[in-house]
Length: 172
Image (cartoon, rainbow, N blue to C red; front, side, top):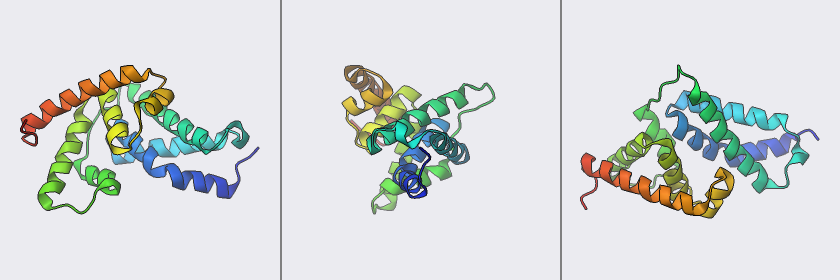
């Protein structure tokens, strides 16, 4: 069954921000992240609408497809990982509350430190702390054991804490 125009529009509007942020975590560049988002939604259009059980199934499919597409793209030898610091504010804008300038700068620095982490930690920290997913939910769509992810998250937090100390934004 072909996608209904209203259905695909609703799926796109419901998922765009999350898929963009996920692609940005991998690509570390606004333009490349937007390219990946476009490819993910184009792949969705090639799927039959009735091949999905419900909205949650579509949402999970989009996340997994985005991760896989970004990983495939990054395997290409000519891709360099880079971060455009101007994009960090755009990337984080949806999650930011009214903060003082000092707090905004601290948030920008923290995001840049998270983006420097290895992929296996960066993705977990983002989805657990910024998007609020449980380890069980992450385990399901990442095809990993939740206890393995908890251990990986602890290691990622330790590494991030060290980076924060070095940057002077964490004193303990």
